[in-house]
Image 1: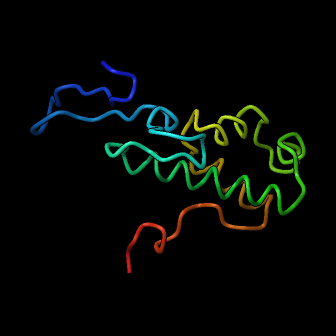
Image 2 (image 1 turned 180 degrees about the vertical axis):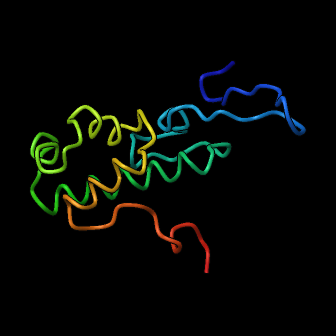
Length: 117
């Protein structure tokens, strides 16, 4: 398997393969995360992770917060914050909620970002 391809396995129920997405930064075609251009086959989750990282970075800058200070304020480990910012993980809902609460701003991509009405 190439490093930029998602792992697939045959589904036990239903038809066709089940796709398991790799960590978001694996889908970088060019540039540096989170400002990078993603590969055409990047799953929607990687695009969301990238947008969350961009918004998190901007919110931290706006509030003058380091990863360490945001970790203290949010209860999210500094390691997890760093991994989200670097595209090494997908941000789970509980982590997202704690970060948004601590930052007093939304960082999850909105309907507008997804191109929905």
